Figure 1 (tube, rainbow, N blue to C red):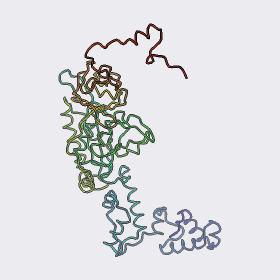
Figure 2: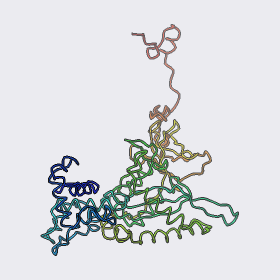
Figure 3: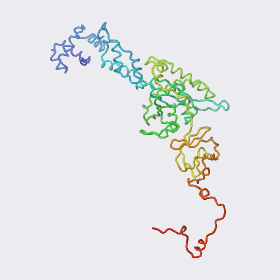
Figure 4: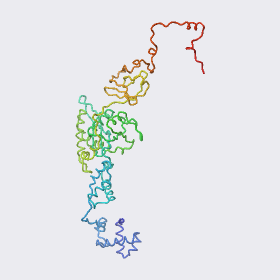
Length: 446
């Protein structure tokens, strides 16, 4: 490996002292450099036709170029790999740099060795945009987040200016982007946006990396965050997993941050001069902007997000379920002593044997389902929030002749009487003698 070059000021001193008649050994001792380095500088100056004093037009850059000319290009050069294609192939599952090097050497037997191949790829990778440095496996992650900047609409009846949120979803490997406007960041809008994003991508990733939005993550934790029950049920329906980003770790969702930045620039900023009177009209304009983003050819890879998706990621996505997820709220509740649970200011019955038991209720706009240990125990039609009661006869303890505690009622345990029981003389004799019946005698304390 060649040693470091001397600074040009030291080379000028070597030439000056040589012209003054000093030997190479004395110059070496005076400048604290090796004697062989001094001799090499003199040889290079002699080959370049340079002598002291140097002309005024020769500055340090010209001097270095004269003394150290670039190597002449040889006729036989090693072929360079297509680094952009290699970068895309590394996103595929189980593809390594060593495998790609073997394929490169099969096509070019006189190509670079493995170590040089890796060095050249790392050097190329450093010049790529920072948003593409992380290696994401195709079909593995979808990053979701809301943009910080809001969109504006106008109510055509009152003229009031309304605001809407911008939901953004980005696939990890291809950076294919989906965006839509929702009125709020509440749980129904959050879940509905996920459903429409999966439909847009025509597939499901293995994981969904989300921000710690309160609608989806009930408790943000560095190690064990709590995911909302509705959010988990949606993930179960689509056979994916929710992986919340760690608090104060934006690099965990760098794709989402970059996707939000792109959407802010090319959606929100692009639509700033247009006026919209409905959410549907706004989303139609957003879809046009999203298609332009996905079809635009990126400079660092020479391909569009759409083409990368078709080449790398579409085949790696899981198949969508036959039906979309139907949004439902989930609530943890406990059955009262009247064997009813309260859901949205209405009371629904459950089997009386579940009194004081922990239950989970799933309710939509039309139905209410109650579960105990994962088993559905009651189904009701959704009632109005008027503090009313909806009770099924089969849930009542009277349906089987039992008390709310589960014990047989007194009326069901007592045999039917056909008439008045005869009065026995023993009863009257006991009363007269002042003694108590054995059945009613108090039990002595032990």
